[in-house]
Length: 361
Image (cartoon, rainbow, N blue to C red; front, side):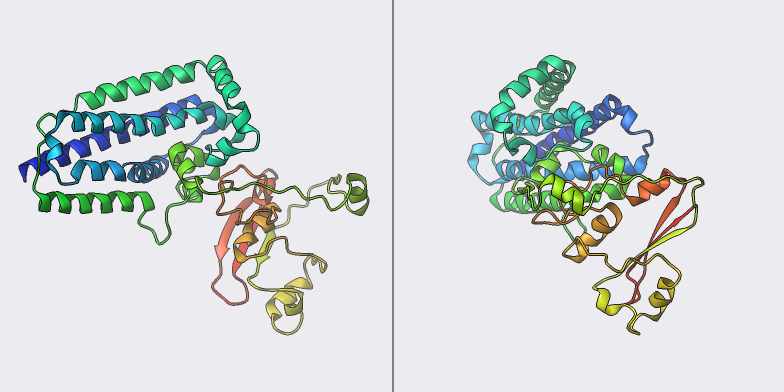
């Protein structure tokens, strides 16, 4: 029992040390890009801790197994050295992924994903990009090396010399409990696994990069290929003759009326003005009604991005559940905000109207 306690203490100390470094790197990320985050609060800090635990939970499940698996080899110096070095290399590698986004975030406005590494042409340019990154932003590699050195010094101060063989039964129980805890931390305790888009729950969409960490976004997009296929149905000149999206309008005085946008579930033209929607029919008589409007989303989950931001369904998965969900989009609420409007979002439980978005001056 005492030997298992020593192993447990060793693993927890190492885990908490790496977790503390994730917080320090986030602080560094904030100060490096402070102009992008004018407002922060405790909710952002709590969200960041949650996503750090998620990334570390997945990364360190293997190390939990290696620490607690029963066997006489735990007292072997070479095995303990192997655990120390491998723990440092793996966790140090993932920790340093965060430093990529210190500068890259300024270009794309979000955390990096695995698709950034595997993007077309990226594999041929990676060597030159790394060299340019080191030369142009030399302070970031310096921060990275300093962080790795401090992490290594911290791990060395955690003694592992007294770890010995432990009871098979107790070690197995400890292993099962620890793996369950790490898996829960990685997945999250909500009904659905923790996703990149969930970062928006802890603050405005512009602070999602501060809540997230790069290891989490890379792991979550590891097996997701989100390439956009280019489709050309018309030539550029022919398309402009059919419809030119660039329009210019001039108003003498702004019309600051309230704007109410209704989003309905599973409704088409055939459901309107047929006696099925009397309330909506009465609103149509007093509102702008575009009879020849067509949906650019295929599923219910596409409703909000297609309606609010005019983003069509271009990928095999919805925009909301993709890694692009936290991108800075100049959508309708932001456009109206620039004109002095405040936006409220309401969910209606009735069958007729599912979602109501109200925008007021």
